[in-house]
Amino acid sequence: MAYDEKLAGRVRALLEGRRGVAEKKMFGGIAFLLRGKMCCGVLNMNLVARVGAEDYGKALKRRHARPMNFTGRPIKGFVYVGPDGTRTRRDLQRWLDQCLAFAASLAKRS
Image (cartoon, rainbow, N blue to C red):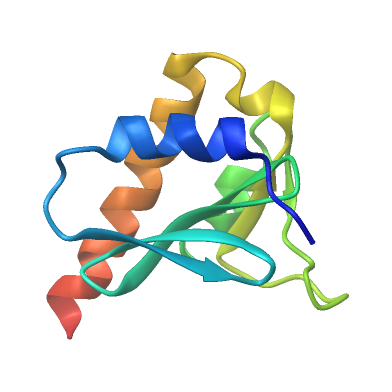
């Protein structure tokens, strides 16, 4: 699989300068990690948003979000966000803020 380099670049730019952020190729796409915990990623044309189990249902109600079913079964806590859901900087930042908050909560637990 490939991933949208333009979307990855936009994510990279919004995360730039944030401490503890790293990139790793995963699942045929690219993942962004916060202190070693997956935060978000890009797979094909979609943003992969790690929102956590608690906010999963709420995230699915947002426009352009759908279950992440990389393995053929939904992965609870992760959603795909289609291109229309990340079209503007504000839309993408909103998703990234949610992902960063969840990843930060994981980093505090370990």
